Amino acid sequence: MGYAIDVNQSNFEQEVIQVSYKSLVLVDFYATWCGPCQILKPILEKLVTEYNFILAKIDIDQNPELASQYGVEGVPDVRIVRQGEIHPGFVGALTEAQIRQTLSQLNLKSNFEQSLEALKNAIAQKDFPTGKQLLDQLFSQYPDRPEVVLEAANFLILLNQTENAEKLLNTIREDQRDFFAKAQALKQLIQFKKDVTFSGESQLEQNYAKACQLTLTEDYPEALSLFLEIVSTNRKFKEDGARKAMLTIFNLLGDDHPLTKEYRKKLMLQLY
Image 1 (cartoon, one colour):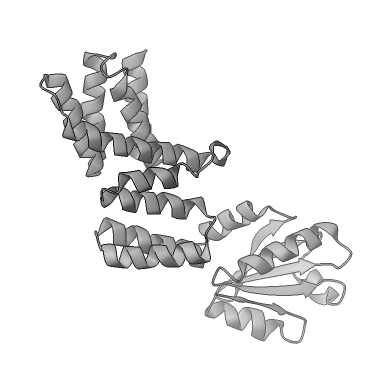
Image 2: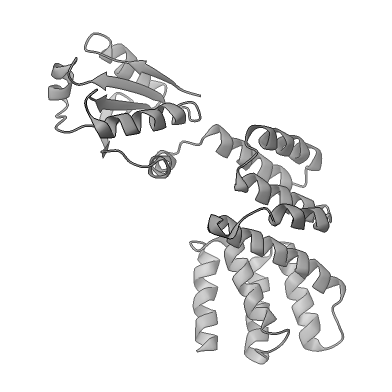
């Protein structure tokens, strides 16, 4: 967790330049009469409690020398300071999401992101006691974050508590966009578990069950390859189930994942 500090000409060297050798510093040049500055201020002050950076606030009317020295022409003007060097940041009142993206590009992670990453690692390693502990902490601190709901559902699916997982997934609304798509994908994973159990006797049924099992073990390249083979063999099988299964994997991986890009193109070529 970082902190915010008012900076002026006399303490700039110590509180910004020297501190930047230990921690990233965001310098917020602002003015009290500036509307966008007042919009940006609470956002930055909120984020500094979540991320490990220092927020140095400089009133340009009280510190015209600093504003002139660093070529501040409009406010708010946020600069980034690392290892004693001052770099451009952004000018104007960005949204909270845009600033979070900027912080992500600077390789900063919030307390929430660090906790969520620890949870994902625990689940991946099947360290269920640690996963349960981390989930309890996350639900206590961030009860309304859909990311936590998704990871909790994923955790329950691994424990074969599919009914409870579905109840959690049903709390994610359609207007929550990317989270809703991921929730639908996790619901499909539950269906995959059922399809693995009842594999059938035909070659197509067995191949589909195998592809479902590969998906459950996160062997996505092999799963996608086999689902694509089923699409090419019999598009109508399981009411277009293989194509829908591929879309599920795309949602799990995200649009930017290399496998999504590769197999989305292959699927399009197969369909059209």
